[in-house]
Amino acid sequence: MKVASDKKNRKPGIALIIVMLVIVSLAALAGTFAASMKVETVLLRQTDSDRELEWLCRSGVEYARFLVGQQATVALEPYDSLNQRWAGGPGVTNSPLQSFSLTNQLGNGTFTVRIVDWERYFNINSAADRKHPIGRQALESALTQMGVEDPEKNIIIDSIVDWRDADSDSSLNGAEMDYYANQPKPYLPKNGPIDDLSELLLIRGVLPEMYWGTNALAALPSALSEEPKSYPVTLRDFFAPMSTGYININTASDKVLQMIPGIDAALASSILRVRTGPDGVDGTADDTPFRNVAELATIGFGRETVERVRRLLSVKSATFEVEVEAEIEGRKRRMRAVLHRASATDVKVLVNHRQ
Ligand SMILES: [Ca+2]
Ligand SMILES: [Ca+2]
Image (cartoon, rainbow, N blue to C red):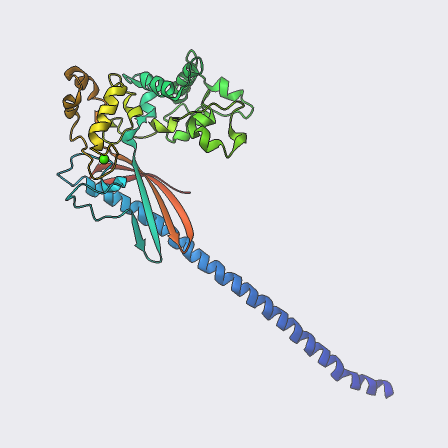
């Protein structure tokens, strides 16, 4: 009986302990739950703003499509130039596009677009094409202006041609599969058109500093070659992977203009002097862009030179690289796209990727 009574007396004690244990573990569980709720709420908010940043970036690309499309509708401006709004200029006086800004507020954030036409550069695939009338000269001119000398210059030119051509027959100073297969980390040559300019970094003879510039690489000393040479201008200042193949004399640099045989430093600077207007600066209100290529005859180009260069030059662009930066409360996201404008109402997105 005593034992039984002891058992009876102990029961409430055990029950109490069990209840307390349950309460303690429930409290612990509730605490964990509350903490994870808090984390989830923050994550949810971040996902929301991530999604919004993504759509802001996409809106930026659409806005750029609209802007370059609208530019083509302005009858008084039958050209593309750096003083126009898409390029970040003030807009031509009385242009219907003058009020459009490159930075816009939308929803809870803003997006900023930066548009660069690729007709300001020489098309690398034209340059690498053996059949192009001045392809090789253009490569030669770019590398010479960069300060690259023989034999490196010929190795790079032949290797770019080999990289792009479909066959596996190596040019005199070039490189094909057998060269790339014997690298410490072997890879295959493209044997097709270059669609991203950074492919140049894979080609025999091209040093990282020739592409990125020595200054940009100074922060990454391991990426530089053993004795880095200084390149004031880089391959990126001369070439683009896609374009109509024409050089726009309203947007090209004097260095790119000099890639065209018949245009020397003096003629290139005449082009810039005329289009930049009295202040000598591109993209300002006093600019006077060329309305057609034939106008070159009025600024010191001989008639024969105009005839020779006009099949390579234009006053219009059709390929536009867009960089969008979206921001919501300090959080940022970038997106890059390449547009092709066939007409005012037909602007296609050729490439689009998040960065
Ligand atoms: Ca090849
Ligand atoms: Ca100016």
